[in-house]
Length: 160
Image (tube, rainbow, N blue to C red; front, side, top):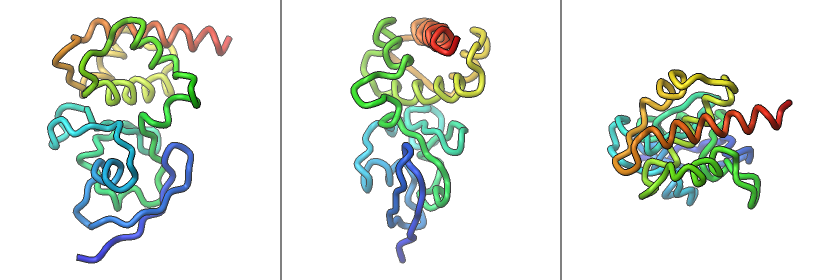
């Protein structure tokens, strides 16, 4: 099987890589580019642990082929913080104890970021809808929802 050359943008940086035709974006991120934040929880798109943002939309990177990233803009959890300064969502997840084992956390954070990027003042119903594709076995969802609500308020205040 021949390799496919891909040129894309990941976390704002131009990136080029070679991948196999059947290689998932998750495998490319982890095994070829060393971006270990997205996790493989199920490999079938049911858990959200591998969520990334592609062209502004949340995608399960285990269901996207690495070759499909050609010309696209990809955001991963590694690009969320600004250097050592955590994104407000990351800070609020810590503050609200909205994480435990950490397997699902990157996916939840990416889904929440995608929501706040398009709807900066979401209702609880909006948050629960946007996070519905992510499963957590440890923490439960109320702490996560409260963390997203609190981050939205903080970010709203920063914009005012």
